[in-house]
Length: 223
Ligand code: GRF
Figure 1: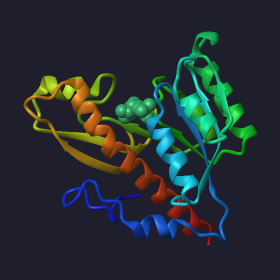
Figure 2 (figure 1 turned 45 degrees about the vertical axis):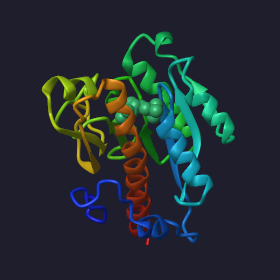
Figure 3 (figure 1 turned 120 degrees about the horizontal axis):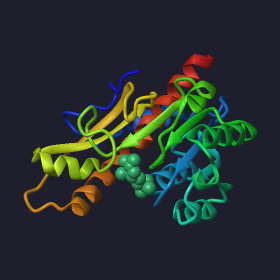
């Protein structure tokens, strides 16, 4: 799947209104997204907001979070979305956590999994249950700066441009086919915080753009 409808070079911020509209196909059931979030949940909220505004033909039957402090759970409440805490500290292995995640998502009939700031390494257990149906968002222009502290990595490398990526997730951390990217300039005075804040503005746009592409391709596939 490519991101042709959105030109990263000419305007990284542009999400074609046509994509959003064409994804709105009332004859087709909304795409059921299971969201995984560990922290603030701003990416989760833009999805929930876009669904509420009928900009995405999707629904979020459940949010799973692993950290009791995650603000994402508070945001879920605002949108009436059920949220379930699956604390990784209660699991003996990554596989055990992923088994619980899969069971929960299956109970809620989830079709696609969105890792929206999920700070856990996921295993084959999740990928086998949702083959090619797990997406991830990462605050760099992958394949540059995978892994943790991607924003700090970009600053340390003194790159002039970084950005963010939404991709289909594979077993290797932050790898897999790229759905959408946006470029963000690194300013001389940037700190990790200021740069991350600017990246997040673009993350919210490409997250919606990528889900719209998925909703659209799913619709075509069903036709
Ligand atoms: C984002 O920068 C995302 O790229 C990274 O974690 C952060 C999550 O932000 N994987 P939020 O919780 O959605 O605000």
